[in-house]
Image 1 (cartoon, rainbow over the protein chains, first blue to last red):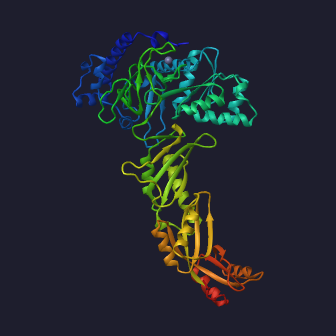
Image 2 (image 1 turned 180 degrees about the vertical axis):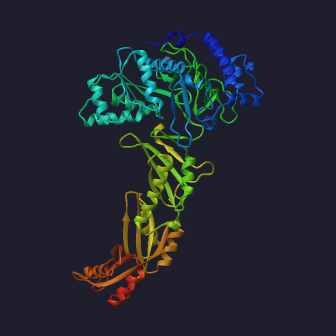
Image 3 (image 1 turned 45 degrees about the vertical axis):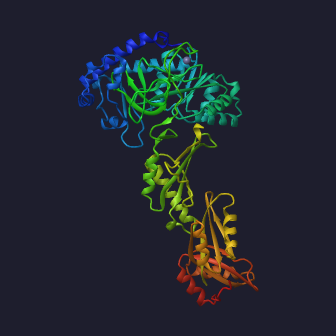
Length: 433
Length: 138
Ligand SMILES: [Zn+2]
């Protein structure tokens, strides 16, 4: 079923007409109400009236994550503060968080796009949606919740963790849809086995998985072990949270709710807009939001777009499953980590050299297992294990303290980490292969 | 009495120990004592050899991380209680032992043990005062 067939299967020309009207309206609104945007336009010599067709969007300056941080908390607010009904922030490991402030209008959009996403993954009235995404400031939990309510699904707000209870609820309330991170679903399958629960006996038909990178291999494994069909969901706090795009029954790309979130693919080096089918950085403009709408936001996610009719009956543009990041950012157990941060932390520890390698894998428990290989500075090599273990612990504590994640530190011999001519292979991410 | 121990950092990977022993053999370094202290992630190989400076240079040249440490080697009578006596001596005088290991097949009826103690000087004079000061035949 399609939640909003009028919009999701609309004739492309009609859709473009409305996108353009919404864009013009948005640009005028932001120019008048948000000094940040007005400043950007003025310094680039762009006027709202310069936007005459959709292609003119390329004249609008980009907005970056740094812009969001610098304007924290309400610098990008386009509505009156009293009209904000909910606020979410994304967990920032690198400092100031970013804010999404929702008006009543934005809450309606969020429920609408999430309802579409859930339906793309097979949800309809009568389904029982077990929501394993965290509730709270993280957008995952509440976003799914609002969408499930819009459809009228029985929604089980279990949130993350407590796996045995998850499985009990799943069995007793006959959940038909589970939403959580892909790695957690595999962990669940394992716990189910320990509990003597056969996943095939449960009623699950769909799993909607997101918030971390995963591969087609992992999809097959999840579908096999969880006895359901696994769908990829994409979203980010800066845009709205979950609900930006989702896979449909074809499992061939994620349909972007483009009547609300206008996507572009750009060359991350030059900023030039690339044609459909070409790989580049994904950029979004929120056409319809009123709280904290955003113009040409650079997601740093790399993908490509494909247009045309889809076997599911929708024609919303599809983005390929994420291919990587422009900035090497890693998402480890839901926390954003940049390799450069790891390097900076190591530089402050005299017992090591800033030569390191990060190996990320799905561990025994299927949760991200991160091993950080660090070369010992020869001067600090000791004949005593406790001294080397002290160094290991010191590094681990610094990482935990500054990044918020536990890394398994493995000391290795000096010069043993491969040096290459160009960029050193700092990250080996076994999750996406 | 005081001898120089060579320690070598070893990642826990297959063949690393064989590589080191092969290297030392090819350079005619004969080992008088070998022990490995290991953890889940790495190991430290500790060696007593006749010419420690030479052995260390061989290892460093081959790219290993090696260093010298002063330790105490004690020649004891090869009979029950000999080690206990030395241990008691250290304990009574609050000389902390970091680790100890024995030397390969001692000559005659002596059993040699290597001690790494926290306070080397104190440990050494204590041994001297109590007659454990026979030089070690390496
Ligand atoms: Zn489709």
